[in-house]
Length: 286
Image (cartoon, rainbow, N blue to C red; front, top):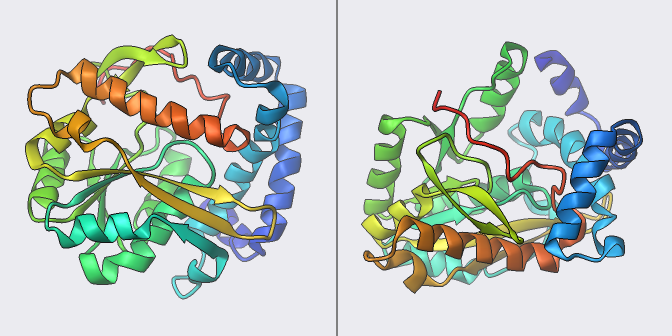
């Protein structure tokens, strides 16, 4: 698997995106369960079908981008592919204040490249982005995922107590932490709160980190501008009072997170991962 990804990483990104779009539609055609879940989630969110339909191809593009994202040579920079930055000043302000920042990138657009672009642009000045890393469940994928998660500008820490402590130390020293906020967390590390009209198990880690450190919570996404046309990165700050209030309950901070995600997804429904089982039951930790 590692060798295959390394070979695919040598192909132009535009080729992989076009191949990925076809892959997305192939999966759609062959999987009734995927189609059913996709449509149910779109309907639950109240999104018009023509607006969500492009996400079928976008899912395949996301998969096809992974070899290039994870395995490209270190000297192949992302900067030429990022045609626009919006909100970079919010990130710089948060880091320069010494409060640190929690950078959250949900399953929308090309989230892998978005986080890498932030690390590439800002880690020389502000230090690496520290991210939680959970080994792949399948051994054949572990070498691929591990290599992809340890690119320049990143420090991966385990999803255990030691890793959480590292995140806290990083933020308290004014550093940068990255989280994927819309994954279903392990049992005991989330709460059930609304998301597009249905109860979903939502992480409480984000609220705890913000409350204990006062770090800024920055929501970002990397929008595809079309196959071979590059990307736009948009950074915005979620309401600081909803996350820094030490009296807020886990349910309140988790609900604030989901409201922010909903607003983002409504703006870009054609690049959201609608097939993800966001309302599935959490697994036991480990």
